[in-house]
Amino acid sequence: MSEKPTMHTPKDPTTTQAWARLQEHKQEVFNNKHLLKAWFSQDPNRTARFSFKVNDLLFDLSKNLMTPTTVELLCDLAREMGIESRRDAMFAGEHLNTTENRAVLHTALRRPADQAGKLLVDGQDVVADVREVLQRMYRFAEDVRAGRWCGVTGKRIKTVVSIGIGGSDLGPFMMYEALKSYADVGIQCRFVSNIDPTDLAEKTADLDPQTTLFIVVSKTFTTLETLTNARCAKTWLLDELRKAGVIAQDDAPANAVSAASAATATAPATFPTAADAIEHHFVAVSTNLELVREFGINPDNAFGFWDWVGGRYSVDSAVGLALIIAFGPERFEELLRGFYAMDQHFLNTPLQQNVPVLMGLLNIWYVNFFGMGSHAVLPYDQHLHRFPAYLQQLTMESNGKSVRWDGTSVTTQTGELFWGEPGTNGQHAFYQLIHQGTRKIPCDFIAFANPVHPTQDTLQDVHELLLGNFLAQTKALAFGKTPDEVRAEGTAEWMVAARVFEGDRPTTSIFGEKLTPFALGELVSLYEHITFVEGSIWDINSYDQWGVELGKQLAHEITPAFHDDTALKQQDQSTQSLIMFYREKRRH
Ligand code: F6P
Image 1 (tube, rainbow, N blue to C red):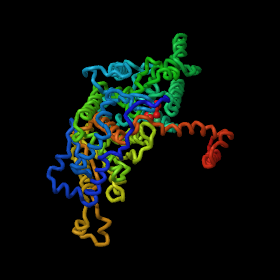
Image 2 (cartoon, rainbow, N blue to C red):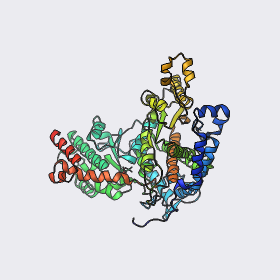
Image 3 (cartoon, rainbow, N blue to C red):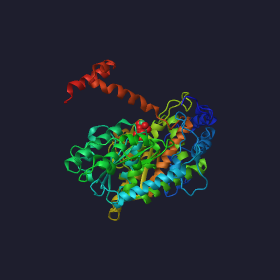
Image 4 (cartoon, protein in one colour):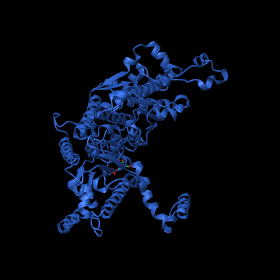
């Protein structure tokens, strides 16, 4: 696309009135120490004022560095930047992804079919399209779950290996780990993403090819890592089936559906063909069904989605197929309902009580007014151990931008480094820096009142140890420990400073009843909308990712230099030296 699209006039948030007032407000209020301690003692309603119940989740924002005036001014900033009309434009399918000229409509993936009115995008009823693909996925998943879809030798599928990377991996992998306890028919899933050959080798090492189903997930179906892993998986499957005497030794892999059909027509009755094997053991998820066919997967066994679903916003599309196989269509519908419930909160709640809006604005407050560039997400739930990694792509690929949607330069910092680990593991690793380091790091704590593990009844007391730690950490970060409190413990004077906790380290607590599919849908939708809010204030395009392209292009140019001297000479001196080291050391 070469023509510049028409959108709102780009706006520099630092030129708004609210920005100037926020700067003054920061000077006036935020230079003192022990602010949170003071605010909590002055205002017995502080927690009630800044706590919000959204469906089944409680959000306690009261331990953030804000007063009611801060919230008012941040909401003024949001209004001046036109956040409400931008939000409505996104939900209506306007082409907010300007550089790719695409709608940004992941919210359509969870819109119930019975909601009044069609959602037409570029003349197409997108909700009808979504429901049609969902129904096909549900039928397919039920067939696999019930043993009606079997491997080439008629054995039931026991393991699903989902091959994808980035948005085609992080979401389904994170959700599979999060919802593992809901797997109900004994089918386990594994996820292969890295082009490092050890990833696929280790994930398939103990598998029986006759009971393994591969799902190749790639929006574009051009991604080097995914297609390489899919080819290697195909080779592994056919080699193993040959070794087991299932397919003929001399049967070559099929590369196209036409070849597969021809092979089926002439196949000897005794052996299934390689094409039969691929037909039974490979399905695909992609927007590019033509390339799926070229790869050798029957498009009848492919599940589509659309260019208006960004990769990192796609977990609730066909990209989640492995989840439906593991947990069943009903659980997936529950997940979609959770997404939708948070969408509705975001869409219909006034800014001052709108949790994704407030959390997004607080991030702006911390990044742009306090210079805090990093954000920890700390789930007190082992099943959410991949959630921070998932959020890294969602937030950092979306908002790691230096220019606005129209190509003009931003004048503030954008994006945050998202990271984290489940509590309490993190407490024994990096929390020292969060408590006493020179940087302040806003943290989101996520916890649930009940564990989902089946042994929950006997382990509630252990769970309470976990929850006690969650609450202790947010309290310590907010209120700290003064020198006098340290002295009162009998600490020698020279050690007092080392034992002081200054407090005023901002945290948000997200507390739920239990990690259900519904709650997980709400959480993911929450962070999608937080990301949107931040991107709207910075006026950037949160939906493209040109920053990943140069590395891909250079890898393509550099790889031949491992063997080719002409390609080697074209490299810079550092790259040449590293390649020479490789040439000396390689074993084969
Ligand atoms: O890393 C860039 C990226 O394009 C991501 O945005 C995307 O999620 C990932 O690669 C995988 O892309 P695909 O689904 O097309 O294989």
